[in-house]
Image: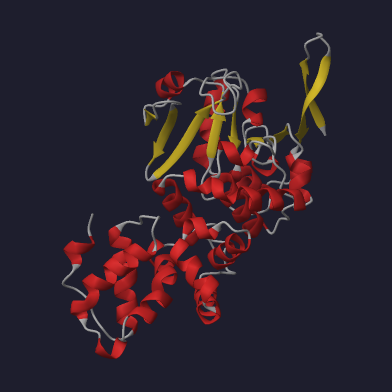
Length: 358
């Protein structure tokens, strides 16, 4: 075990981070994406401190193969763009760089400063950047060239202890970004981590903050959950924490009012849970299967299958679209989900293909 030091205001050297070697963290280098490692190596060789960060490091430590490899660097976007011709700068308030290798996209963020608060968008140092991250388990930095893990916040031990701990002060973490509540619950289920009592209570008491979140962000979060290998468990956990009512208010109302519907609804969602998640650790192949689970029981209660024909598809589509509000999933995915439900009842739907498109 090694340590990184920095000078405090008095000019004395103090420990700022713990450094874990390959023998200590035991990350399987074969699980690290070679293009992500190449990006880090190139930027480091150009003199800019660069690491794989966040969920990818967490998953590597948990012996899972990450789906995405995000990267953080001291290099400003203009420099990164100059070093990689296969890249483009995105974003308005805070610019990021996307580097393309075939169909793979790697997102590189420049270290951000705390100078303008937790929501500021100015560049800074790694010491500042780590303090802006949500939970300790997502705040580790990995150098694939030297095979070192940097830990500024005790995240390595928290992962070993399977605990979720916030970095941002509890008073403001969910007020600043209410979506963190959804992610905390999702992380707990996917990683089989424990949410401490104080964090569970804070989430329950802060659930109303989700009313401020845009429909597009809620849609994005639901899509990620539905593609996960434990979608049913995550949704049931969100319901128990008082969050699901803000994601699916109509379904939540039926769950509260009808015990039979509640049982059927969560039974249907449980079929999304997978145990063979080694190949696709966090995502399934299709969003439509998850959307079908969200609307299947409502559709079954809304129409009589014995009297239903292909012509009723348009109205069923409208009912389903209204039922899943405020999320606004792609029409083609929702349409595919409904056609699959119709097919289960022996009804083939073809003629509404244009209606499904955006």
